[in-house]
Length: 283
Ligand code: BJW
Ligand code: ZN
Image (cartoon, rainbow, N blue to C red; front, side, top):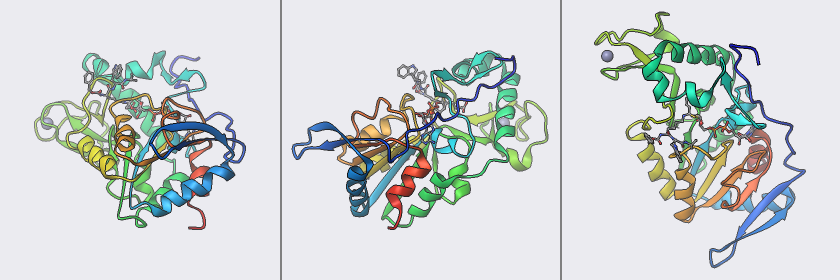
């Protein structure tokens, strides 16, 4: 790969929803038994469960934005690489301490790639669902704010937001869409310390209160979607595990199988927009 390139791990050719779907069904005793189903077998159950649900919790990952053109981090045997560095290195707390300008260069590159992208059918389908339930909470690992731009309210951004910068000293925030003066790193107007992208890097804690609110929603929900995540990164992946343990019906939407596929109630294989439309269509 050419130096300086960001290797995009775009969604692979996907087995469509109607081609394959792997379902898991819970026995009355709560024991989970696996069987393979066609989507036609599986969808009525998922739709009926969703129709009966009162409190829905949704965890999303990079795959929900893939159809907008946002690259995912992992997939196809590759992980995103930038200037020869795997994203797990450049997006880690260690690099922030060693080379803040490089971190800004990486996130400026990503912000530039994001700026003209639009929410897709999956973001819109989720935004349209929010008023249909007593409670509907989206927690996202994505930093692209496409859920909010699609109209979802009160999205819990577990890993921050690429469109904000935060002071490394006093934690003051600025909105990069409107307040970016182009200096790198930006200088805090309150205390003059350097600012950093307001995102959660490997080895850093999630924003105070956000994870707690997401965990509370996961605990109370009766239906949980896990959409477009490789299910590898913690503590975000604790959330659907909490929901499942609290008794929620859990549904994964992903063209690939993940470590969560074997423990959810229904793993729907396909792209997020296509599958969500099939699940929620003609409500
Ligand atoms: C589609 C699709 C379509 C494609 N439709 N789907 C060892 C064991 C356990 C934990 C750890 C450990 N060592 C370290 C840890 C902790 C670490 C962690 O979990 N590491 C694991 C990877 C091993 N976690 C942390 O460090 C977290 N903090 C923390 O734990 O604090 C406590 C602590 C403090 C100090 C020391 C140790 C612990 C923080 C995690 C922050 C993650 N940050 C990143 C980068 C953000 C900034 C940036 O954007 O650069 O967040 S990492 C990256 O992964 C990003 C994502 O939000 C996150 C999750 O990725 P996601 O969303 O799942 O994307 P992909 O690409 O992996 O998957 C895409 C999926 O979409 C695929 O499945 C496709 O199939 C699918 N897809 N097309 C639907 N059309
Ligand atoms: Zn400051």
